[in-house]
Length: 269
Length: 260
Image 1: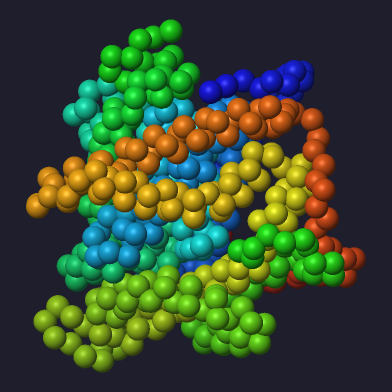
Image 2: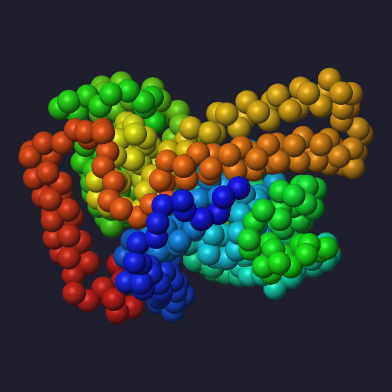
């Protein structure tokens, strides 16, 4: 698998700086939108949720995801880039299937986490964001969660970078921690944009917390903290099983795996 | 998505469709009233049925919206303790008028969002999208990921079916219990992922050999349909949306008291 372009490189110093700027702006847009939503949340929902917050959440997260993609995508080598469509298909097919069952999980990030483990945090974040945007062509309701999917890909890549996939029992732990971040991140989106969750099983969990007298945001956050860490622990374990089941020859083709000794027993180069 | 065919001259540009979809979705979300959303939804359904798109878009939207509506009804219809007008109560369950109104508002607003964007994706061609992306100098990688995902999805499901058949002919029997099922899943998932990674590797070599990683400007052989009238429509739509949002939210909406 070739990892570098066969064409001669152009003098790309300024282009590199611009890309870094896009990445920083994208991250800042997502972070600022999240902070605004959490700080300025309307506490009383009897008057209807603020439609301004909804539009702000939609545009801020979408802008951030698009900037991240524009910044990261051109830096990804072609050998990794061709894996992204495969990852997206895995995400969409599994996510669609699990979403239609009565299980309060999602399992819609197996492809994203797989790319993150094979190719690193930046590729993982871009795959997550792209997954949200491409999937929204079939199901527009996933569009606002693109930024959250980017966060999952980024954290999975970091976990692989720091050796959490070297021991099999550490992978679900890393998934659990990633799930806590993902749940806390996606709960304001679900509550401000949709006023609830999109699945019946997750909706039942939310209504159970509402019945105990929680506010909408805290009920959705608690549901997310129940579903997301378990979901990501399962996803990380599945991905760990998968990468260890692949032949060493296949996994060692990825420079990220060689450089950071992501998998147990893999030699550094 | 439409099947790939030569672009029809005089057809609609994807950007025109996208700007119309954004204007409809953003205004109904900003107005945030179930009556307005219901009216827009009915209008859209009528328009799509006349257009012939209704038969594809409306069932696809229903598949997404029915579980979402049920979830909203479960959450807000039965337990909405902020509600004051109680219609029916039994134990912890309290059906309130405010809860039902909230569920209807959110459900219909989201339905408009889903229907307009599904209508958009059912009426554009992937090749047109790719030509547009290269016209506006967006990273060519984006167009590749978008179109490649849309085209390999059926190939992947076909391959998964063939692997399952091959394993069954080798004597794969799904064993009893969770363990047996897991083993069966593993015996199908590992060859599938391996084959996909291998294919992706040879695709990377072919792309590189054709200068995909090059940084120069690209040209597209495909002409995306466009017209001066469509260009004017797009600018007017975006300007009207900006003016509407400025007037609707007014200057003071950022302060908590001014939040609508």
